Image (cartoon, rainbow, N blue to C red; front, top):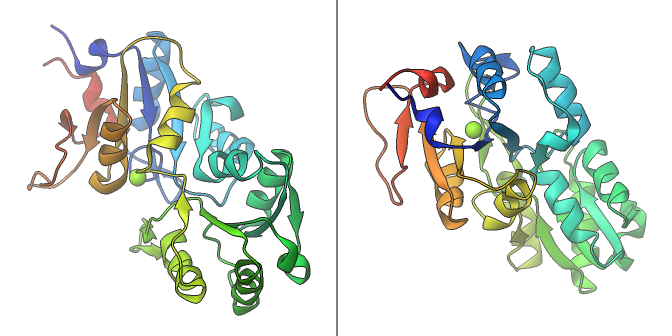
Length: 256
Ligand SMILES: [Mg+2]
């Protein structure tokens, strides 16, 4: 009897709402990931959360009992950092200290708010320290012709007590002030999936995620198989439909 995991050689696994919720592990997730690794499946963790660096995400995953290294983690922040640093220019970053460090680590010069007027590019990533002064600095940069990038467009991220505002909420303020739309790198854009896919060997790869509008849409756009993690009585509707629907990661290992 085959289980769903047998059909694939590797997985791009979303974090929030699949592996953990607010850094509390979801039931069965840690054991399921260990079993997938034991079977030799490739696993890359793929998150739209731009607030932490790859190494910090890996450290938190290890704290949950999951074998993870920085090079098996792709964040929208890291993928966007690599993209905005590809010209080795000067970047004004609205985002966490960790996001600024990712951009500097990728080879760009990260400007302060006072220096933002000379930026070649602006990168927006959600963070809890967002304030009006950052919006003013982004305006200066944008007014002088800086290109506008975003880590992602998620309006919210899940927390145990309910959704919190994410990058999209802050990006809306920046886009409104600048009067133009950012180029986003994270899910559902194919770019981040291509970056993550490149970290796995050849074979059949599936995206696992809990959001139709980011994980499933983006995986489909990138030409990958898709598995929706969804609890509750109503199967979510929308196009493209996921290839499979499971209630939790452990269900990948249930005989079918
Ligand atoms: Mg999620």
